[in-house]
Amino acid sequence: MIQANQFVEAAREYGFNRYTGVPCSFLTPFINYVINDDKLEYVSSANEGDALATAAGAAIGGERSVVMMQNSGLGNAVSPITSLSYVFRIPFLIITTHRGQPGLKDEPQHELMGQITEELFDLMRVPWETFPKEPDAIAAALKRADDYMRKEQRPYAFIMEKGTVAKHELKKNPISNISQRQTTLTVHEAKPEALLSRGDALKTIIDYTPIDNSIVIATTGFTGRELFATEDRNNQIYMVGSMGCASSLALGVALARPDLKVVIVDGDGAGLMRMGNFATLGTYAGNNLFHILLDNEVHDSTGAQATVASNIQFAKVAEASGYSISISGYELSLLDELFHSTVHEGPVFGHLKIRAGTMENLPRPDITPADVLKRVMQQIGSQF
Image 1 (cartoon, helix red, strand yellow):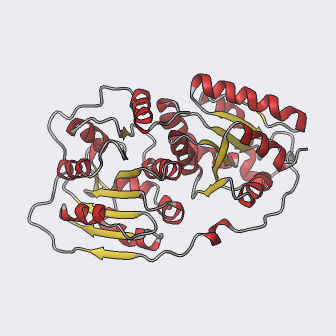
Image 2 (cartoon, one colour; image 1 turned 45 degrees about the horizontal axis):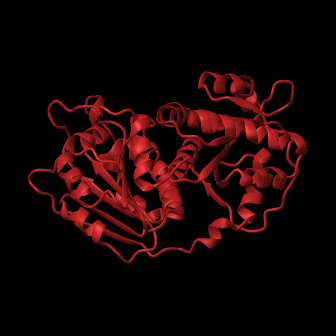
Image 3 (tube, rainbow, N blue to C red; image 1 turned 90 degrees about the horizontal axis):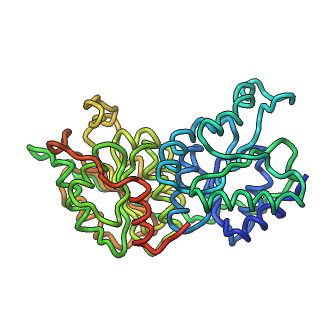
């Protein structure tokens, strides 16, 4: 058995200062230790996939990151592991617990995942090893993880067995240190005869996001492709998978790089898929994060099947989640209002209704995701 500080302090020597995750009783000592330390950062995510994407975003911003989860939630992280961190080549450390480990008595819901956890990492091509159980094994384990991540620029995993870490008392509540923000909701209800196109919105967003001090993260599907077709710039990331994770990825970047304006261009389908992340952004994000949701009420890139967005008031969701400013409407002036807002403590949200459809002969990016990320990181002076 080890003490929480023995691993966390050894990891700190390798530059791991950012932690994200969803709790598990096996992880409680680690989480408590990180929360208690004012020089370490912990983001409590709504689900494991968002925790992983936030760790990936922090890594893009230059902060080495650890994501922690129970193996029962590993399924929630499959999409960002396989279509975000693998494709974009983003390294971070994964610690997952081994509930339902064969041979040990546990709750019935952990039985199958306990049997397949190791195999699941193998299938996702994430190298793993058992989390070190003795203090003198920690340094070598971290070195193996560090060597792999630096060479391959992909995640490395530790699987933690029951009873590995001794208890550690929680001495503070990190959420209580985040003040209750003043929130403002503005809804422009006047509907024009013709709705804006996605391209109209993207051109305006480009105007407000200069290359030298901002990053634009465009959600999966037509949004990223159309942003690329409109103007391909060194400060833009086009999500090609991990649907719904653009906002959690952006949170990680924004936390790591408060000097940058970080802009999420989201969609109604993606926003609905990971709606729990609204609460995480509203709690943790600072005033450098701008969340724009382009809502055409359909899954446009898969045949325009309807979403349930017509029944959702996204700006009210953002306001209720703690965003400083939330604006909803139909006109491009909404974006002017959003980007000109200066007096706010936390993130801002713009919900812009647009029409379905996209430009003719819409291209796909002719640059690989890994190269997209490489040039973005060069642009902002960041490295893994």
